[in-house]
Length: 340
Image 1 (spheres, rainbow, N blue to C red):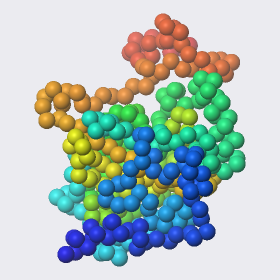
Image 2: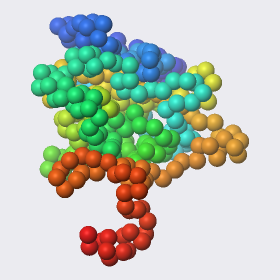
Image 3: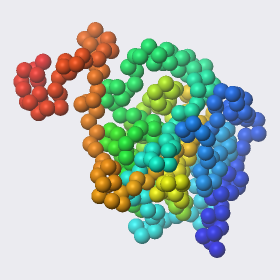
Image 4: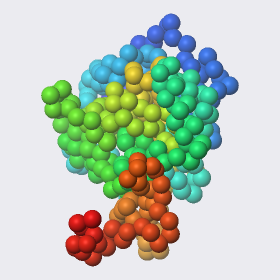
């Protein structure tokens, strides 16, 4: 009975924890023709199968990520949580997970939102920056950090390709992406975020969380300034993100599906929290041939990047045959190159 009630409360969570602001009119209602819908995935909307995509309080219900996180934790506590898992009770998140497979859906933050809709999410200062960035994108300038082999910051981490691996333990969960060989560390041992004296701005931020049955709730802060995706707005170093992860029943031809509700709070840039749903799919490794196909690779960005900055500060590209062989050992051990 306790398990049934706990599962039912997950579906009722938006209602029982709501702290809605009655004075708020969500952007999706103010500008329905501008693609400002909260849930963006591929060319269509979808909700998580285990609850509403609109989290407790709605898109304008919480003043901060901290308030949002505490409300979710208080709700778990009211039902006897957070859940203290052992190695034998943790959910099975093993295997390789992709952003696209035979189901035919790729879940990426902001893919089906148009420029006008993205602009309406921003305050006037951030709008001016975004319009300038769009002009530079249109002129094919290299303003993407990835062009210079810098990591995709979080939450852009969700949108990049490559296989994902998850390693779940009672006190810490590792969420890995093949691209840039990046692992997020989510501490579920009860620790708080680093103190202000210790906190720095990191590519993936600092993540803490707790388990509510089989749902992992995460609060991430201390993130570097970055962009949500190419042709998308910037996020500031004030960004904080709330996530709820859950493995659900397969969808279509999928073997497994991981659904993640993501709510981004950026008081420096956003006029309201930005909510979306992301999905990963379990890859089929049932035969030797399929296992060979999903073998992960080591990411070496330098080998593929052609962008560089000249001595005059101009962004340019290497012409064919000009790029130094900087991934070969003889480049690093050749004094002629080293002293240059």
